[in-house]
Length: 360
Image (cartoon, rainbow, N blue to C red; front, side):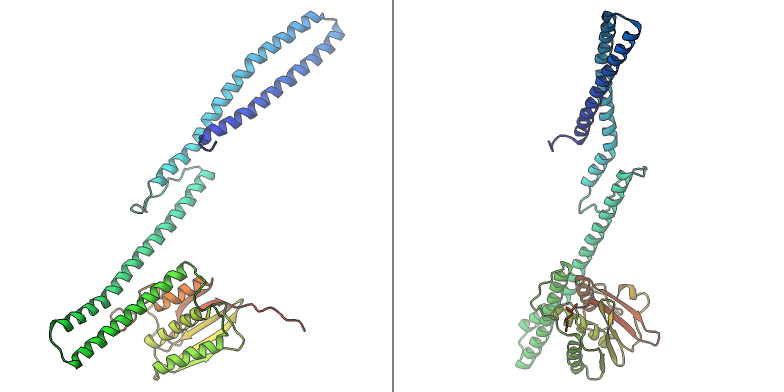
């Protein structure tokens, strides 16, 4: 049944309905004719033979006319179904021509404002989203390859130089230290890419699934980063009792990236605040530096992006992108803006853990 073309199935359904309608119409016509004949014959005295001949003539006419009407209506239904489904077949042919090498192809939208036109528009919107995702993944792979190529090239150069010429113990130690630094950078980049892949798949089953209270975690992260940069003060303002519905390892990673970004690209003290916001928790990190360039703000959370590409830093431009991915995986929000009094503000909203109310 599923292999029969749709137009044939629609025509068959229409033919069955039409057959029932015509059969009913013929039956009602004969019944009414018999009743009218009986009343008219009783009043005028017309012979039964004449009535029977008139009835036979009507039956012959119905047996001739109704099949003709049935055949014509069925042919018309088939042609109408074929015409109505022709745009669908055209869209199917065009959709089959869309491949990964031709993602820019779109379906023709019929000029009629009906369900077929809306279907074509919806399919074109879907193709646009798929093309955007495909372009995004291709750009991501290209950027990741570019970021991996630099430390790999440096690592290969260090090893080749160490093997090419005889070196004393101090020179070999320096070469190993440089290779170790590049290896650590590769490991960190690989872990960042793996985390991005997990959050893009909304993988909510990381190793650490505990959900800690927010204030102690913020103070712990601030203390750790404060030791790494003692010249940049970090203040934390978070009321007790706030708990974000995010696993501890991902929450710590998101907050660490926000504070580290402020330390790296900002000046003065770094202010970390957390406040309840509707059914979420809003975490803001502000520095007192020059702020983001206006043209960079819309791309602050993009992957492999930095405000100053010429800055000699060890970052890969994945910190804020990872924070954004963690927020998306938790159905949260994120953003950045320049503070009116100076400095940049980066924020993230995460769903708050709803604690069950206890009755006395």
